[in-house]
Image 1: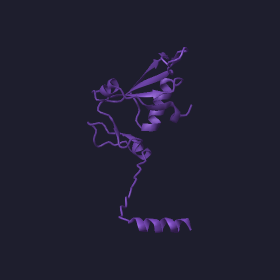
Image 2: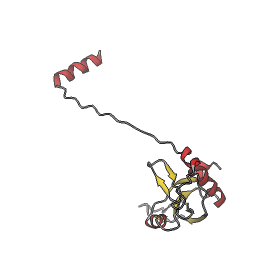
Image 3: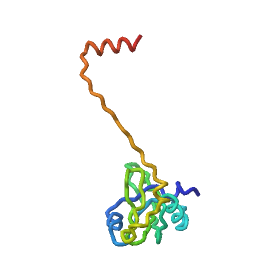
Length: 147
């Protein structure tokens, strides 16, 4: 199983947000239901560059969903992994796509460089040009474009 396909997305709820801001930060991720705890540890280490202290998993079984027809529907089977990091270590989100691991607060001189090398920052510059163009000049431009 590929590491990029094990961790699907982060799982944001009130409970997971409260666990992130505790003394021992725990982060919740939706993972592949067939992934083991060892696979999740390896995938987290390869993606974020930091070894988790513990991983606990929870299965959310399919439940009945009202579909408005005679045949009831079911939700999907999901597996949630709660990953515990070392004390004082937190994941810092730079962009919506990229996250990196911050150094522990007690060891500010030690920086994990392997985690910073895996992060690729994307800079997008947008230049908006606003010009006042009369209707006559717009017609001339569109006539030239048609030719």
